[in-house]
Length: 295
Length: 294
Image: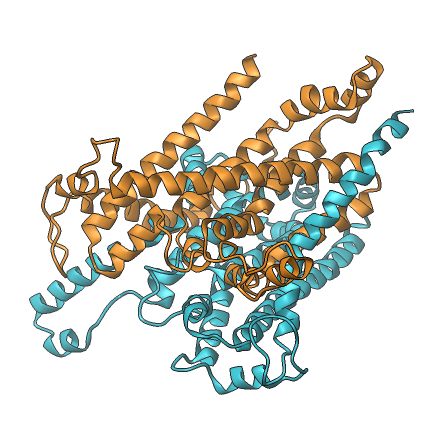
């Protein structure tokens, strides 16, 4: 009876869902298709021929921008952000389970970082490092290190201000995932390990970590992909060398050939590859964890 | 009872230290600096400490005349309009989709599958998802081709791309997920027996939806709304790319000012933006609590 009543709304809603999925995927699929235009093809349909011409153009480079270098920079930064996000979020997640002085304050700061308009964070970090530059120059002058002073340019960079800017975006996601994980975590396993005489490290290494492994992989995946696509927080805080999304944003105004679609397809491919690998990794860990605990 | 296993191992503060240090150095300190620098005098290249209200004065110069709004008010108004339009569309779509997934799709497997399908586009670059509208909305794009083919218009429609319309469309495309996920989360926590109770008491589908599901999804709606509004209020990338670099927004103003190294002015703008965003968040949380009491 209940079921009959509900199913009346089912098909219209299913149609809405279908349209929503089309809305989400349609445009991206269009540029995926258009990236295989023939050499005569333009930015819009119809397809004029079918080729890898624009991928070849992309490979040769787009104007003055070194896409390959930007891609490597983004991959490397994403990897560092991923590792740090996992380590810091995991460690903080464990801390939040205990009595932690200032836990509320730390939590509110984390949430504030998540909802803070990115341009503000980015501007603040940019300012901070410019002021640091001033301080460092003053210090170098004071100690008379003229040679260093002359070669010194800025402390802004991928792995200083840029890394920090990315972490303010990835860490809140990491911590929230940790909360979700430990909410469902049964401490009886830890008790049991302790009763058997395991040290805290052994308990963590052999009991807790295998159980939460899949989620930890998820945090890593979030860390990488959020960093890989990040623009707003990088914009004022990245220094002289741009990441791939920043270069891409610049290219949208200068490149008017389907090679930009080819670039879009490649970066999307890398994102999906990382997500896919992470899902496979998580599944493998879950199977292993399941076998160990006999669950 | 606090488990003893939880208190074993390194002290909590030590475990939270690296995490907290990152936020102290890269979030709290920069925000404080913005506040300080917003009072520094404007100079061409250097940052010179001082104290002046001049930055704020110049932001609001001539804003007392409401009949002819100043640039700042116009910019805030257009940014606010983007936020409201995006919020309304994202809420409507997000709620509908979440409702369908949570209450009409019965098998958990199917639910997960459809949910994952919705989240996959989230993993592709935002700029890519923006420019993917170009072949559809451009002058010679698919929509114009279709409209002309059907004989609806005889020359291409111009306002589809690089317009306020395309900006809002891109926002909805990019950020509806931020609304859908928290609402879906809230809905999945609703006790299904409440729906049966409503049904037994003779409530119609709409009554159940409005009197049971909407109030119980409140938290999700609030979280989603805060996400969407704060993102759109501070955005400059989407407005830039989808507006053809022609449309103003507060984030864009800040970005342009920093590119001219006018840091004190940009900082003052950032403080004003932050104040506006905070007011919206406070208003939202009030609104929701008010509902709870009614």
